Length: 187
Image (cartoon, rainbow, N blue to C red; front, side, top):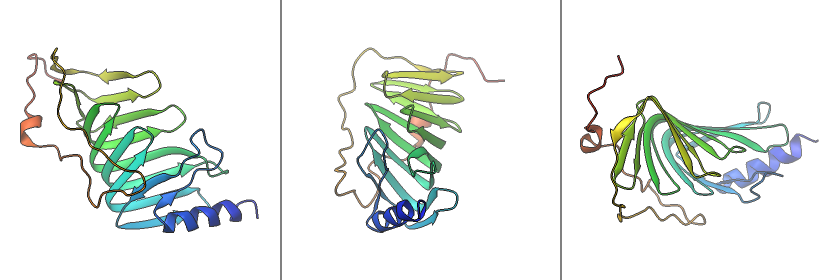
C-alpha cells in the first residue's frame, strides 16, 4: 500500500499532464508535455518520447526523449533529456545532445557538443554545468567569445498552467554552430 498510493497519485496527475513531487523542496507540480509516456512504479521512473517540454522552477527543457527518476517516496531526483536538447535557465540558453537536471542540487548539466549563450557571449566545450542556487556556470574545456554588452533579445515566456504546443526554444542552427575559437583544438 505504501508504494501503491504514491503510484496512483502519480498516474492520476500524469494523465493530466503534471508529475507531482511528494515531500520535495518544491511542492509544485512539474508541468510537462510529450507525445507518449510510460511509468514504471517498481523502478520509480517516468519516461516520455517525442516533442518533450518540461517546466521546472527557472528551467525550461526540451528534447526528443525524457526520463525522470524518483526515490521510493516519489521525490524526483533526476530529470534526463536526450536528443536535440534545448534549455533556458536563469537567462542562459543551452543546446546539446544530452541534458540532466539534478533536482536536489538545482544543477543542469549539458553534454554532447554543448553550447551556452549568456548575454551576447557564446561558449562551447565538452560539458556545461549551470548551478541555479549560486547563479554560477562551470565549463569543461571551454572556448568561445566573451562580450561586454547585454543581450536584450526575447526570452521564452512559458505559463506553467498552459504549456505551449511546441518548444519555444529555437533549434541549434548553422549560425550558432560556427563559433569563433581561439585557435586551440580539443586534440
